Image (cartoon, rainbow, N blue to C red; front, side):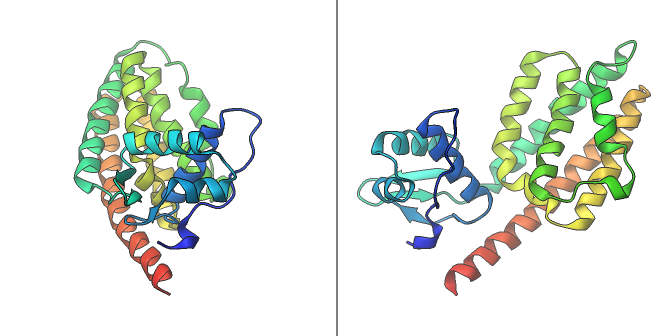
Amino acid sequence: MRASAIVAQARPSSTGTLAEQVYEALKHEIHDFRLVPGDRFSEAEIGQRLGMSRTPVREALFKLRNEGFLGVEPKLGWFVLPIDFGRLEQLYDLRVVLELASVARLCATAGPAAGLDELKPVWLVPPAERLEDPRELGARDEQFHATLVRAAGNDETARVHWDVTERIRIVRRLDFTRADRIDATYAEHAKILRAVMQKKVDQAQLLLRAHIEQSKAEVRRITLHALHAARVRAAG
């Protein structure tokens, strides 16, 4: 077990429980590939480093296990699970279905859809005003797609879509670690948004499907590279 892989200090928070603080700290480590597949640790080690008792640590670990990030074995402790690319492919496929259906509903609705105007000052901007921070841009990207789904007016679809969003976040936000992918995202989002606002359903769906499929292919390549780089750092 690499000591450097264990999460550093949890940030204090005025809201939320201690378990949520542990959960967020660990999840950031996994998303940033500071905890990589195969890394092992015990509840006691996490608790000691975070200054937490066993109860919130254990609660956070089981939440991450239920979400598919961690595994646990008797006597061997906790470990980071391998990234299941097959599962991620299925989640991306589900995302395509949900978003295409939402766009069709948006385009069939008379009048402007509520919520879409808030996307214009974020995505319809000149290159000089584009964000460059990968974490912030990743969050904005999630909100773009979530807004399209919410604006269609089906709360259950929006709930399922957000669940998918949270489950693919570990790889999806890597799409914004390269400048060319940031530029592509801005250009593609702008085209999708204009097509939806103009009620051009066929064009909007075509653009959206191509955008998600390209992102899926890119994040797989970037994820494999990030995992390799993390293992090289660990070996060094």
